[in-house]
Length: 84
Image (cartoon, rainbow, N blue to C red; front, side, top):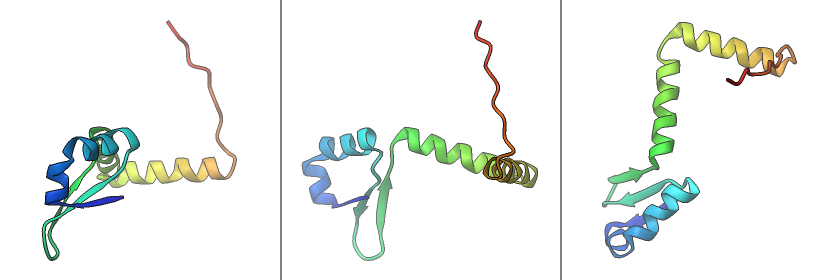
């Protein structure tokens, strides 16, 4: 995680954004007491949105938990994908 003031961010915006997108860093821009902005890459944002969607339904959450439990207990299997 990277932190910066607004002034520092303005001076070197490109460098900060490169770190966020290339290194999957999270950037927090401080804006005073208990105030700030969080900058994450689009890829990270999309992953968070997908996770939120998958966990928004209790049925999906239970299915995912069951799959994780099976995997951890060695009850998983692999299948070859058919490429066309």
